[in-house]
Image (tube, rainbow, N blue to C red; front, side, top):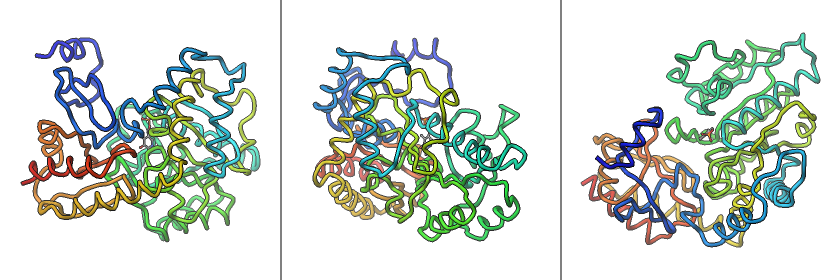
Length: 393
Ligand SMILES: *Cc1c(COP(=O)(O)O)cnc(C)c1O
């Protein structure tokens, strides 16, 4: 038995299913284990290492920040945070943002803003606190975000869950309208992922997203888009919601935003940016300067000339290569967020076999899932696909 794995299992709570792989280092899109074996990475730490491993400019930015100032409390200002926030608001067209450290925290912030927006405007007695989320969604692991998550498998053990969440079937406009009617005057927000990631890479239909926007606008309900997985260039646009032609009041970002250091952001528009006031929300580590420095490197790269177009082009190549494989029944997704349905093989067995052959991939529900670094090259895609083909043969 590997001594790292032994030590790990002895001292770390067993809350994840892990592969027997100890990762030691990485360069670009290739990871290496503790025996020097190399793996092409089509998972990027679940869409987090958006620039791959140890990108030169990203490493420089993070190291320089660690040498300058690694943390300040939120009693003070830092330039690196201000620069990051200005850049992110500029790229997304949002007015202001709040810093957390994870996707769940970003969504917690969104939930709190939605409830306080209605509390401030309609009063406590109105009980206008219901948040509509979608069946098969995933919003995080804290108590509020678990409650928001529309999958019964997550609603176990930790009772009581937070009340005030109602689930609507994805892409079912009449269900949306029915649930809004049932909860008339009590709904403060609708929250959704443009592409359900953990739910199995399930994209929403444009008509459905537009119906959400229309209902929200009509009833002064906030529209919240959870772009923790889909955001920051993943789909070939900076925000995935840009594909749908709507502008949510709140957008949350995390995973790929800082290239692999912890960050979570809640973006707010003109309507929602003044809801939180001093003392109503906070996070000690939120907006950590090292994370912001990494974030600045990511934002500079992703907003660079032709970068998003290159993501879309690489995605197209990826889909084409995948659809040539016999065992592939279908490919879903948008940009470099890709789900693959298989005809006969079990996705988890395939992921394990890929690992044994030098390729890291993910699964989501019964599908294979690919979230490669946005910097992946066409050659690396081809190399990974060859391994996948061999495994699926
Ligand atoms: C991963 C994910 C989260 C949770 O993010 P954490 O950083 O693990 O808290 C929330 N929403 C979506 C859509 C995600 O993919």
